[in-house]
Image (tube, rainbow, N blue to C red; front, side):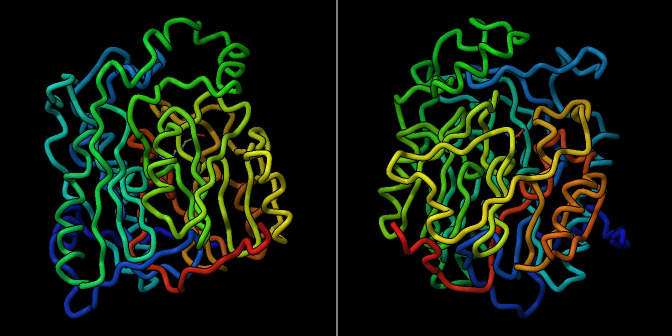
Length: 396
Ligand code: ARG
């Protein structure tokens, strides 16, 4: 393994790059899976990111020692700079490999989200591009999102989407119906009725598929979907409800959309720490969170000759301070071609496992970016990967 820290462009240059494409290169939107060779990608930025504030969809429990509990507004400058340093480095590492990288243009996230149905004091940011944009073939779909704080997040990506739309005559640009996110969309008192320390009850409730969102309207975050050609696996949980999966099923009639759950996950949010396809025929599964699919789909991967490998344990026992995701961000790496992965450098067990599985492992520092929305997979969204749509699961 070689450490990759390359000379950084300044943040300003990165944003400029986001605004004006590298001269002459033809923009094409095309990406059918999580592993074909990546040629064009969006990497999020931490600039203008805000400390998340609790809302009906989520209770944030920041430890008192982090000094952030009860605070709101923009993250301290120093934390933003540290995160941007690592995000810029990720962009530079990919550019060095010939991958075109665009960056979103942050909006002023430190302002309330006001709709006829709700008023929420601030927004979050545009670091986790994966959460908002779902690329399926030549289409980029803006997700409904399910947190009030994230209602306007798509605006940070609009300059890019507009550009792809102008440049690629075949690009399909779509947006799922904007949700109301009124009190009808959330179960009242969901986070108050069980003590945060009562882990067993939290797990039992999640295992019974009793999640915070109701079925009042379709809701999904893009990061709840993972793509394997004709098959798209969508996690039903806190951020995606059954109607959201159903909406995706009707929107992509030529795909097989699978609604999946993972047992024993106290916080079922986004699939990319639970089920991670590595290449054709190989998928990484979270050993603590058994995959549950509809009964007629039991052993779907195995039946189709796929090997399901249990992920190595995370290198950290405690999460990065101020990060609201679990230590399983260890699994949240980015596959840039069927033989190469970009990983967080301190995740030594995961990285050794990928090495043993035959991947070239490119380690980069990324933990300072975690509080802004996750790890390397979260921070990116596909624009172009080589390859066409294939059926990797012919045995139904
Ligand atoms: N629920 C995951 C975990 O903590 C975090 C997933 C983050 N993914 C993302 N795309 N933001 O295990």
